[in-house]
Length: 97
Image 1 (cartoon, helix red, strand yellow):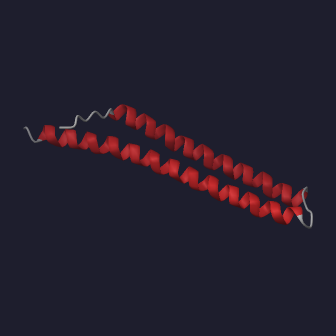
Image 2 (cartoon, rainbow, N blue to C red):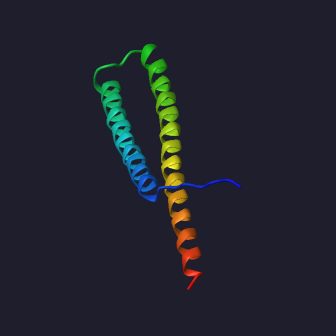
Image 3 (cartoon, rainbow, N blue to C red):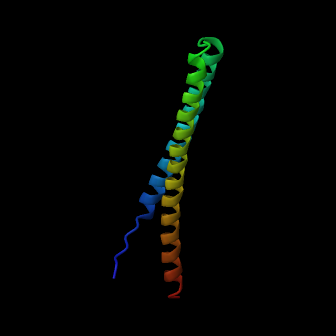
């Protein structure tokens, strides 16, 4: 029979840290996107290179967002694992009353 050990404090703190990281990375991507848009508007306007650079950055931002969204999903999953084990343990304890 398997042995389960879930530290709800650890899952909660890890989840909180991952979700905080997700938000920080989302904010950073927005900041970088604004810098790139400003550059393209004010300091990097060429007939050929700009046309290649803008889609290149858009593809990078899309990939970054997908990775970051996955990080958010991992954070939410870790939280749900801790919550589910806490609830199950509580329910089992309450059934003994």
